Amino acid sequence: MQTSRFQLGLIATLAVGLGVSVASSQAIGYPAGSAVSKGSNPLWTVGGSVRSASSSDTPTTLLAAPSDQDMVLTDLSLGSTDAGAHPVALLLDDGTLLGYWIVHGTSGYEAGPEHIAFTSGIRIPAGSSLKLNPGIDSGRWVYYSLSGYYAQP
Image (cartoon, rainbow, N blue to C red; front, side, top):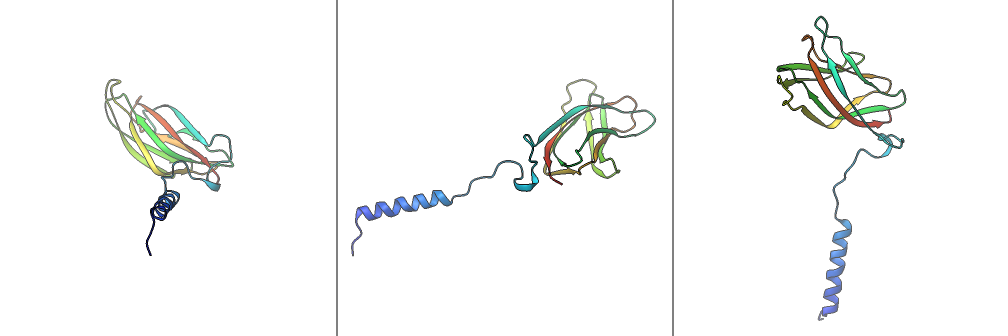
């Protein structure tokens, strides 16, 4: 039994077609299904600055999650233009510590922010507030930028 060129060509074409159809591609995007908000834009971003007090380390509220949706923090940037290393804490309104970082600043504007990308994100439960504690160094400014997405609780 001899195989013709036509049969070899057909087999090769089918093999390539099968390979392309079953090849996996990289998944890109935020979690799908019931995890992502049903709203028109599930992404959020917040930025601003917080000034530390000289006599207390009272945290400042940065954002409040809606009562019907969780918020997932995926990216965080922190910076300071004040010289030195400054401790900064991120916590929930119930006191749960979510993270603690040392922000390095300089006496000028040449200091770049600390960028943190969370692989799986930090969950802010529905109805909770996210707070930042810049420490007790008198008059020190901490600049922040937060981003993430809304999710169903």
